Image 1 (cartoon, helix red, strand yellow):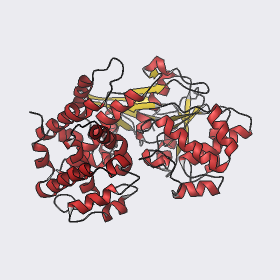
Image 2 (cartoon, rainbow, N blue to C red):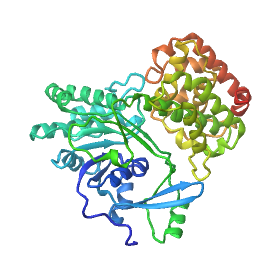
Image 3 (tube, rainbow, N blue to C red):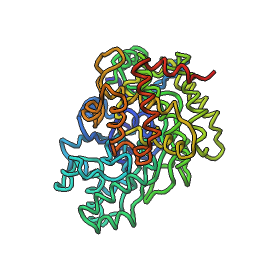
Image 4 (cartoon, one colour):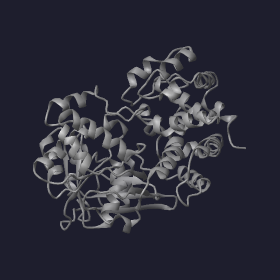
Length: 468
Protein backbone atom coordinates (compact mmCIF):
# COMPACT_ATOMS: atom_id res chain seq x y z
CA UNK A 1 0.00 0.00 0.00
CA UNK A 2 1.38 3.39 -0.98
CA UNK A 3 2.26 5.57 2.00
CA UNK A 4 0.20 8.44 0.65
CA UNK A 5 -2.94 6.51 1.60
CA UNK A 6 -3.21 6.79 5.37
CA UNK A 7 -5.50 8.35 7.94
CA UNK A 8 -4.49 11.64 9.54
CA UNK A 9 -3.91 10.70 13.22
CA UNK A 10 -4.43 14.31 14.36
CA UNK A 11 -8.09 14.34 13.32
CA UNK A 12 -10.61 13.89 16.14
CA UNK A 13 -14.21 12.76 15.81
CA UNK A 14 -17.40 14.73 15.91
CA UNK A 15 -19.46 13.27 13.05
CA UNK A 16 -21.05 9.87 12.53
CA UNK A 17 -22.26 9.34 8.97
CA UNK A 18 -24.91 6.73 8.13
CA UNK A 19 -24.69 5.37 4.58
CA UNK A 20 -21.05 5.74 3.61
CA UNK A 21 -21.52 5.50 -0.14
CA UNK A 22 -19.64 7.11 -2.99
CA UNK A 23 -21.69 10.31 -3.00
CA UNK A 24 -20.90 11.38 0.54
CA UNK A 25 -17.24 10.45 0.19
CA UNK A 26 -17.07 12.60 -2.96
CA UNK A 27 -19.05 15.50 -1.52
CA UNK A 28 -19.73 16.05 2.20
CA UNK A 29 -16.61 14.29 3.46
CA UNK A 30 -14.43 16.53 1.30
CA UNK A 31 -16.07 19.68 2.70
CA UNK A 32 -15.55 18.35 6.25
CA UNK A 33 -11.90 17.56 5.48
CA UNK A 34 -11.34 21.04 4.06
CA UNK A 35 -13.00 22.74 7.04
CA UNK A 36 -10.50 20.96 9.32
CA UNK A 37 -10.60 19.76 12.91
CA UNK A 38 -13.40 17.21 12.50
CA UNK A 39 -13.32 13.50 11.77
CA UNK A 40 -16.00 11.14 10.52
CA UNK A 41 -16.96 7.66 11.67
CA UNK A 42 -18.71 6.04 8.74
CA UNK A 43 -21.48 3.50 9.07
CA UNK A 44 -22.52 0.99 6.42
CA UNK A 45 -26.14 0.04 7.12
CA UNK A 46 -26.17 -3.02 4.86
CA UNK A 47 -22.94 -4.67 3.73
CA UNK A 48 -19.26 -4.71 4.76
CA UNK A 49 -17.84 -4.03 1.29
CA UNK A 50 -16.91 -0.38 1.82
CA UNK A 51 -15.38 -1.11 5.24
CA UNK A 52 -13.40 -4.04 3.87
CA UNK A 53 -11.94 -1.98 1.02
CA UNK A 54 -11.09 1.01 3.20
CA UNK A 55 -9.67 -0.70 6.30
CA UNK A 56 -6.38 -1.89 4.69
CA UNK A 57 -5.86 1.72 3.58
CA UNK A 58 -6.28 3.15 7.09
CA UNK A 59 -9.66 4.58 5.96
CA UNK A 60 -8.00 6.92 3.44
CA UNK A 61 -9.19 7.03 -0.18
CA UNK A 62 -8.76 9.00 -3.38
CA UNK A 63 -11.38 11.35 -4.80
CA UNK A 64 -10.79 11.84 -8.53
CA UNK A 65 -12.15 14.93 -10.27
CA UNK A 66 -13.22 14.12 -13.82
CA UNK A 67 -13.04 17.23 -15.99
CA UNK A 68 -13.00 17.66 -19.76
CA UNK A 69 -9.34 18.66 -19.44
CA UNK A 70 -8.28 15.58 -17.47
CA UNK A 71 -8.33 13.90 -14.06
CA UNK A 72 -7.22 15.37 -10.73
CA UNK A 73 -6.77 12.96 -7.77
CA UNK A 74 -7.02 14.08 -4.14
CA UNK A 75 -6.33 11.84 -1.12
CA UNK A 76 -9.01 12.26 1.57
CA UNK A 77 -8.01 11.34 5.14
CA UNK A 78 -11.01 12.52 7.19
CA UNK A 79 -12.44 9.05 7.99
CA UNK A 80 -11.37 7.61 11.31
CA UNK A 81 -13.36 4.34 11.35
CA UNK A 82 -16.07 2.48 9.44
CA UNK A 83 -18.67 0.36 11.24
CA UNK A 84 -21.03 -2.20 9.71
CA UNK A 85 -24.43 -2.00 11.35
CA UNK A 86 -25.69 -5.56 10.75
CA UNK A 87 -22.49 -6.97 12.29
CA UNK A 88 -22.62 -4.86 15.47
CA UNK A 89 -25.55 -2.45 15.82
CA UNK A 90 -24.58 -1.70 19.41
CA UNK A 91 -21.20 -0.33 18.26
CA UNK A 92 -23.05 2.03 15.94
CA UNK A 93 -25.34 3.20 18.73
CA UNK A 94 -22.34 3.69 21.02
CA UNK A 95 -20.61 5.86 18.41
CA UNK A 96 -23.74 7.95 17.90
CA UNK A 97 -24.31 8.28 21.66
CA UNK A 98 -20.70 9.25 22.39
CA UNK A 99 -20.21 12.69 24.01
CA UNK A 100 -17.69 13.39 21.21
CA UNK A 101 -20.40 13.11 18.53
CA UNK A 102 -22.19 16.35 17.69
CA UNK A 103 -23.57 15.60 14.21
CA UNK A 104 -25.09 12.49 12.63
CA UNK A 105 -25.28 12.96 8.89
CA UNK A 106 -27.01 10.65 6.43
CA UNK A 107 -26.94 9.58 2.79
CA UNK A 108 -29.14 6.50 2.87
CA UNK A 109 -31.07 7.24 -0.38
CA UNK A 110 -34.72 8.17 -0.47
CA UNK A 111 -35.90 4.68 0.43
CA UNK A 112 -33.66 4.55 3.51
CA UNK A 113 -35.98 6.79 5.53
CA UNK A 114 -38.79 4.20 5.52
CA UNK A 115 -41.32 6.87 4.65
CA UNK A 116 -44.08 7.25 2.09
CA UNK A 117 -42.71 9.64 -0.54
CA UNK A 118 -46.14 10.97 -1.49
CA UNK A 119 -46.91 12.08 2.09
CA UNK A 120 -43.56 12.20 3.91
CA UNK A 121 -45.02 10.14 6.76
CA UNK A 122 -43.38 7.13 8.40
CA UNK A 123 -44.27 3.87 6.67
CA UNK A 124 -45.36 1.94 9.74
CA UNK A 125 -45.78 -1.21 7.69
CA UNK A 126 -42.13 -1.24 6.60
CA UNK A 127 -40.52 -4.47 7.88
CA UNK A 128 -37.49 -2.62 9.28
CA UNK A 129 -39.75 -0.23 11.19
CA UNK A 130 -41.75 -3.16 12.57
CA UNK A 131 -38.44 -4.70 13.70
CA UNK A 132 -37.22 -1.45 15.27
CA UNK A 133 -40.43 -0.96 17.23
CA UNK A 134 -39.97 -4.38 18.82
CA UNK A 135 -36.17 -4.47 19.27
CA UNK A 136 -33.71 -2.08 20.96
CA UNK A 137 -31.02 -2.89 18.38
CA UNK A 138 -32.31 -1.28 15.18
CA UNK A 139 -31.97 -1.97 11.46
CA UNK A 140 -33.26 1.23 9.85
CA UNK A 141 -31.71 4.68 9.73
CA UNK A 142 -34.69 6.20 11.62
CA UNK A 143 -34.38 3.41 14.17
CA UNK A 144 -30.70 4.15 14.79
CA UNK A 145 -31.44 7.87 15.14
CA UNK A 146 -34.24 7.29 17.65
CA UNK A 147 -32.41 4.69 19.76
CA UNK A 148 -29.18 6.75 19.82
CA UNK A 149 -31.06 9.91 20.80
CA UNK A 150 -32.74 7.92 23.58
CA UNK A 151 -29.33 6.79 24.85
CA UNK A 152 -28.09 10.38 24.88
CA UNK A 153 -31.14 11.60 26.76
CA UNK A 154 -30.76 8.80 29.32
CA UNK A 155 -27.07 9.70 29.76
CA UNK A 156 -27.86 13.37 30.30
CA UNK A 157 -26.26 14.40 27.00
CA UNK A 158 -27.70 16.89 24.51
CA UNK A 159 -28.98 15.55 21.19
CA UNK A 160 -26.82 15.53 18.10
CA UNK A 161 -27.79 17.50 15.02
CA UNK A 162 -29.32 15.26 12.34
CA UNK A 163 -27.95 16.42 8.98
CA UNK A 164 -29.75 14.76 6.05
CA UNK A 165 -27.77 14.90 2.80
CA UNK A 166 -30.26 13.06 0.59
CA UNK A 167 -32.42 14.37 -2.25
CA UNK A 168 -35.68 14.73 -0.34
CA UNK A 169 -37.90 17.80 -0.55
CA UNK A 170 -37.64 19.69 2.75
CA UNK A 171 -35.37 16.89 3.89
CA UNK A 172 -34.84 18.27 7.38
CA UNK A 173 -38.58 18.52 8.00
CA UNK A 174 -39.20 15.02 6.58
CA UNK A 175 -36.51 13.39 8.71
CA UNK A 176 -37.65 15.30 11.81
CA UNK A 177 -41.17 14.01 11.15
CA UNK A 178 -40.13 10.39 10.59
CA UNK A 179 -37.88 10.38 13.66
CA UNK A 180 -40.52 12.09 15.78
CA UNK A 181 -43.23 9.68 14.68
CA UNK A 182 -41.10 6.61 15.40
CA UNK A 183 -39.94 8.04 18.74
CA UNK A 184 -43.54 8.70 19.77
CA UNK A 185 -44.47 5.09 19.07
CA UNK A 186 -41.58 3.96 21.31
CA UNK A 187 -41.62 6.63 24.04
CA UNK A 188 -43.78 9.79 23.86
CA UNK A 189 -41.52 11.59 26.34
CA UNK A 190 -38.54 10.92 24.08
CA UNK A 191 -40.42 12.41 21.14
CA UNK A 192 -41.13 15.54 23.20
CA UNK A 193 -37.43 15.82 24.16
CA UNK A 194 -36.33 15.50 20.52
CA UNK A 195 -38.90 18.07 19.41
CA UNK A 196 -37.77 20.55 22.06
CA UNK A 197 -34.01 20.15 21.83
CA UNK A 198 -33.12 18.46 18.52
CA UNK A 199 -32.10 20.04 15.24
CA UNK A 200 -32.76 18.79 11.71
CA UNK A 201 -31.35 21.37 9.29
CA UNK A 202 -32.53 21.22 5.69
CA UNK A 203 -29.83 20.82 3.05
CA UNK A 204 -29.35 20.78 -0.70
CA UNK A 205 -26.47 18.73 -2.11
CA UNK A 206 -25.20 18.70 -5.67
CA UNK A 207 -22.37 16.85 -7.36
CA UNK A 208 -22.55 14.20 -10.06
CA UNK A 209 -20.80 11.05 -8.78
CA UNK A 210 -20.79 8.18 -11.28
CA UNK A 211 -20.28 4.64 -10.08
CA UNK A 212 -16.61 3.63 -9.86
CA UNK A 213 -15.63 0.92 -12.34
CA UNK A 214 -12.72 -1.56 -12.41
CA UNK A 215 -11.27 0.50 -15.26
CA UNK A 216 -11.24 3.54 -12.96
CA UNK A 217 -9.18 1.61 -10.39
CA UNK A 218 -6.69 0.48 -13.02
CA UNK A 219 -6.35 3.95 -14.48
CA UNK A 220 -5.82 5.55 -11.07
CA UNK A 221 -3.09 3.05 -10.19
CA UNK A 222 -1.34 3.68 -13.51
CA UNK A 223 -1.44 7.47 -13.19
CA UNK A 224 -1.07 8.01 -9.43
CA UNK A 225 1.38 5.20 -8.75
CA UNK A 226 -0.50 3.50 -5.92
CA UNK A 227 -3.36 1.04 -5.51
CA UNK A 228 -6.62 2.34 -4.05
CA UNK A 229 -9.46 -0.19 -3.74
CA UNK A 230 -12.05 2.45 -2.79
CA UNK A 231 -11.68 5.60 -4.89
CA UNK A 232 -14.62 7.80 -5.84
CA UNK A 233 -15.11 9.68 -9.10
CA UNK A 234 -16.80 13.07 -9.33
CA UNK A 235 -17.38 16.03 -11.60
CA UNK A 236 -15.63 19.39 -10.93
CA UNK A 237 -18.84 21.14 -9.86
CA UNK A 238 -20.08 20.94 -6.27
CA UNK A 239 -22.65 22.75 -4.17
CA UNK A 240 -23.88 22.35 -0.61
CA UNK A 241 -26.57 24.62 0.82
CA UNK A 242 -27.27 24.12 4.55
CA UNK A 243 -29.84 25.68 6.85
CA UNK A 244 -27.82 27.25 9.65
CA UNK A 245 -29.79 25.57 12.44
CA UNK A 246 -27.63 23.25 14.58
CA UNK A 247 -28.12 22.27 18.23
CA UNK A 248 -24.41 21.95 18.94
CA UNK A 249 -20.96 22.57 17.45
CA UNK A 250 -20.34 22.20 13.73
CA UNK A 251 -17.41 22.54 11.32
CA UNK A 252 -16.70 25.99 9.88
CA UNK A 253 -18.51 25.07 6.68
CA UNK A 254 -18.88 28.65 5.53
CA UNK A 255 -15.08 28.92 5.18
CA UNK A 256 -14.92 26.21 2.49
CA UNK A 257 -17.75 27.22 0.20
CA UNK A 258 -20.84 25.77 1.90
CA UNK A 259 -23.75 28.19 1.60
CA UNK A 260 -25.16 28.59 5.12
CA UNK A 261 -28.63 30.08 4.69
CA UNK A 262 -31.86 30.70 6.58
CA UNK A 263 -34.09 28.99 3.98
CA UNK A 264 -32.93 26.14 1.76
CA UNK A 265 -36.28 25.63 0.01
CA UNK A 266 -35.73 27.68 -3.17
CA UNK A 267 -32.29 26.11 -3.72
CA UNK A 268 -33.69 22.66 -3.10
CA UNK A 269 -36.63 23.09 -5.47
CA UNK A 270 -34.30 24.45 -8.14
CA UNK A 271 -31.94 21.50 -7.88
CA UNK A 272 -34.48 18.72 -7.35
CA UNK A 273 -36.61 19.83 -10.28
CA UNK A 274 -34.05 21.24 -12.70
CA UNK A 275 -31.23 18.73 -12.14
CA UNK A 276 -32.75 15.61 -10.59
CA UNK A 277 -36.00 15.94 -12.52
CA UNK A 278 -34.27 16.15 -15.89
CA UNK A 279 -31.69 13.53 -14.84
CA UNK A 280 -34.51 11.06 -14.22
CA UNK A 281 -36.28 12.10 -17.43
CA UNK A 282 -33.12 11.55 -19.45
CA UNK A 283 -32.40 8.29 -17.63
CA UNK A 284 -35.71 6.60 -18.46
CA UNK A 285 -36.10 7.96 -21.97
CA UNK A 286 -32.39 7.58 -22.71
CA UNK A 287 -32.25 4.00 -21.46
CA UNK A 288 -35.28 3.06 -23.56
CA UNK A 289 -33.64 4.66 -26.60
CA UNK A 290 -30.39 2.73 -26.05
CA UNK A 291 -28.19 5.45 -24.51
CA UNK A 292 -25.87 4.15 -21.80
CA UNK A 293 -24.88 7.43 -20.14
CA UNK A 294 -26.20 10.96 -19.65
CA UNK A 295 -23.31 12.31 -21.75
CA UNK A 296 -24.43 9.97 -24.54
CA UNK A 297 -27.96 11.33 -24.35
CA UNK A 298 -26.73 14.94 -24.50
CA UNK A 299 -24.66 14.12 -27.59
CA UNK A 300 -27.97 13.22 -29.27
CA UNK A 301 -29.52 16.50 -30.52
CA UNK A 302 -33.05 15.22 -29.98
CA UNK A 303 -32.34 14.62 -26.28
CA UNK A 304 -30.41 17.89 -25.88
CA UNK A 305 -33.30 19.81 -27.39
CA UNK A 306 -35.84 17.92 -25.33
CA UNK A 307 -34.16 18.68 -22.02
CA UNK A 308 -33.73 22.37 -22.85
CA UNK A 309 -37.43 22.45 -23.68
CA UNK A 310 -38.22 20.86 -20.30
CA UNK A 311 -36.27 23.56 -18.48
CA UNK A 312 -37.62 26.50 -20.46
CA UNK A 313 -41.25 25.51 -20.95
CA UNK A 314 -42.18 23.26 -18.03
CA UNK A 315 -39.79 23.44 -15.04
CA UNK A 316 -38.60 27.06 -14.81
CA UNK A 317 -42.17 28.47 -14.99
CA UNK A 318 -42.98 26.44 -11.85
CA UNK A 319 -40.02 27.70 -9.79
CA UNK A 320 -39.19 30.66 -7.58
CA UNK A 321 -35.46 31.31 -8.07
CA UNK A 322 -33.11 31.51 -5.08
CA UNK A 323 -31.79 34.99 -4.31
CA UNK A 324 -29.54 36.23 -7.12
CA UNK A 325 -29.93 33.05 -9.19
CA UNK A 326 -30.81 33.26 -12.90
CA UNK A 327 -32.56 30.00 -13.71
CA UNK A 328 -31.78 30.17 -17.42
CA UNK A 329 -28.06 30.41 -16.66
CA UNK A 330 -28.40 27.51 -14.19
CA UNK A 331 -30.02 25.42 -16.93
CA UNK A 332 -27.16 26.12 -19.34
CA UNK A 333 -24.63 25.19 -16.66
CA UNK A 334 -26.51 21.91 -16.11
CA UNK A 335 -26.46 21.20 -19.85
CA UNK A 336 -22.68 21.64 -19.87
CA UNK A 337 -22.31 19.34 -16.85
CA UNK A 338 -24.48 16.68 -18.47
CA UNK A 339 -22.43 16.82 -21.65
CA UNK A 340 -19.07 16.38 -19.85
CA UNK A 341 -17.62 13.35 -21.70
CA UNK A 342 -15.41 12.45 -18.72
CA UNK A 343 -18.48 11.68 -16.57
CA UNK A 344 -19.92 8.30 -17.47
CA UNK A 345 -23.07 8.50 -15.35
CA UNK A 346 -25.12 5.50 -16.44
CA UNK A 347 -28.79 5.96 -17.22
CA UNK A 348 -29.43 2.61 -15.49
CA UNK A 349 -27.82 3.90 -12.28
CA UNK A 350 -29.94 7.08 -12.23
CA UNK A 351 -33.07 5.05 -13.03
CA UNK A 352 -32.88 3.11 -9.74
CA UNK A 353 -35.61 3.60 -7.13
CA UNK A 354 -37.92 5.59 -9.39
CA UNK A 355 -40.93 5.01 -7.14
CA UNK A 356 -39.06 6.87 -4.38
CA UNK A 357 -37.61 9.62 -6.57
CA UNK A 358 -40.38 10.69 -8.94
CA UNK A 359 -42.65 12.39 -6.36
CA UNK A 360 -40.10 15.08 -5.50
CA UNK A 361 -38.24 15.21 -8.81
CA UNK A 362 -41.10 15.29 -11.33
CA UNK A 363 -44.59 14.76 -9.90
CA UNK A 364 -44.53 17.93 -7.78
CA UNK A 365 -43.82 20.05 -10.84
CA UNK A 366 -46.58 18.29 -12.79
CA UNK A 367 -49.16 18.72 -10.02
CA UNK A 368 -48.38 22.42 -9.49
CA UNK A 369 -48.31 23.13 -13.22
CA UNK A 370 -51.60 21.39 -13.91
CA UNK A 371 -53.22 23.27 -11.02
CA UNK A 372 -51.99 26.51 -12.60
CA UNK A 373 -53.23 25.52 -16.06
CA UNK A 374 -49.76 24.98 -17.56
CA UNK A 375 -49.16 22.09 -19.95
CA UNK A 376 -46.36 19.64 -19.10
CA UNK A 377 -46.17 17.20 -22.04
CA UNK A 378 -42.45 16.50 -21.66
CA UNK A 379 -42.61 15.63 -17.98
CA UNK A 380 -45.70 13.52 -18.61
CA UNK A 381 -43.73 11.63 -21.26
CA UNK A 382 -40.95 11.09 -18.68
CA UNK A 383 -43.45 9.53 -16.24
CA UNK A 384 -44.70 7.27 -19.04
CA UNK A 385 -41.08 6.30 -19.75
CA UNK A 386 -40.64 5.34 -16.08
CA UNK A 387 -43.72 3.13 -16.33
CA UNK A 388 -42.37 1.50 -19.51
CA UNK A 389 -38.96 1.03 -17.87
CA UNK A 390 -40.54 -0.42 -14.70
CA UNK A 391 -42.30 -3.06 -16.77
CA UNK A 392 -38.92 -4.82 -16.93
CA UNK A 393 -38.74 -4.92 -20.76
CA UNK A 394 -37.16 -2.35 -23.07
CA UNK A 395 -38.30 -1.34 -26.56
CA UNK A 396 -36.56 -4.32 -28.11
CA UNK A 397 -38.08 -6.78 -25.66
CA UNK A 398 -34.85 -7.28 -23.72
CA UNK A 399 -35.03 -7.67 -19.93
CA UNK A 400 -34.29 -4.66 -17.72
CA UNK A 401 -32.82 -5.20 -14.25
CA UNK A 402 -35.20 -2.88 -12.39
CA UNK A 403 -33.83 -1.80 -8.99
CA UNK A 404 -36.74 -0.43 -6.99
CA UNK A 405 -38.33 -1.34 -3.63
CA UNK A 406 -41.66 -1.68 -5.49
CA UNK A 407 -40.21 -3.54 -8.49
CA UNK A 408 -42.44 -6.67 -8.31
CA UNK A 409 -45.60 -4.56 -7.89
CA UNK A 410 -44.61 -2.23 -10.74
CA UNK A 411 -43.94 -5.10 -13.13
CA UNK A 412 -47.27 -6.69 -12.22
CA UNK A 413 -49.12 -3.48 -13.14
CA UNK A 414 -48.03 -3.63 -16.78
CA UNK A 415 -50.78 -4.45 -19.26
CA UNK A 416 -50.99 -4.54 -23.03
CA UNK A 417 -53.69 -1.87 -22.74
CA UNK A 418 -52.00 1.51 -21.89
CA UNK A 419 -55.16 2.86 -20.22
CA UNK A 420 -55.25 -0.10 -17.82
CA UNK A 421 -51.52 0.25 -17.15
CA UNK A 422 -51.92 3.94 -16.32
CA UNK A 423 -54.89 3.24 -14.05
CA UNK A 424 -52.84 0.67 -12.17
CA UNK A 425 -49.84 2.93 -11.70
CA UNK A 426 -51.98 5.90 -10.65
CA UNK A 427 -53.45 3.72 -7.89
CA UNK A 428 -50.05 3.72 -6.14
CA UNK A 429 -50.81 6.07 -3.25
CA UNK A 430 -47.20 5.91 -2.05
CA UNK A 431 -46.04 7.40 -5.37
CA UNK A 432 -48.76 9.64 -6.81
CA UNK A 433 -50.31 12.45 -4.73
CA UNK A 434 -54.12 12.73 -4.65
CA UNK A 435 -54.02 15.75 -6.96
CA UNK A 436 -52.68 13.52 -9.75
CA UNK A 437 -54.43 10.27 -8.80
CA UNK A 438 -57.79 12.03 -9.11
CA UNK A 439 -56.94 14.09 -12.22
CA UNK A 440 -58.74 12.55 -15.19
CA UNK A 441 -56.97 14.91 -17.57
CA UNK A 442 -53.57 13.73 -16.34
CA UNK A 443 -54.62 10.10 -16.73
CA UNK A 444 -55.70 10.88 -20.31
CA UNK A 445 -52.42 12.64 -21.16
CA UNK A 446 -50.33 9.92 -19.50
CA UNK A 447 -52.21 7.24 -21.43
CA UNK A 448 -51.59 9.08 -24.69
CA UNK A 449 -47.87 9.43 -23.87
CA UNK A 450 -47.54 5.76 -22.95
CA UNK A 451 -49.39 4.70 -26.09
CA UNK A 452 -46.99 6.77 -28.21
CA UNK A 453 -43.97 5.30 -26.39
CA UNK A 454 -45.13 1.76 -27.06
CA UNK A 455 -46.03 2.51 -30.67
CA UNK A 456 -43.17 4.79 -31.77
CA UNK A 457 -40.32 4.44 -29.24
CA UNK A 458 -38.75 7.02 -26.92
CA UNK A 459 -36.61 8.95 -29.39
CA UNK A 460 -39.45 9.42 -31.88
CA UNK A 461 -41.74 10.67 -29.09
CA UNK A 462 -39.21 13.34 -28.14
CA UNK A 463 -38.54 14.47 -31.68
CA UNK A 464 -41.60 16.67 -31.77
CA UNK A 465 -40.65 18.25 -28.42
CA UNK A 466 -37.04 19.10 -29.24
CA UNK A 467 -35.96 22.71 -28.93
CA UNK A 468 -35.93 24.35 -32.32
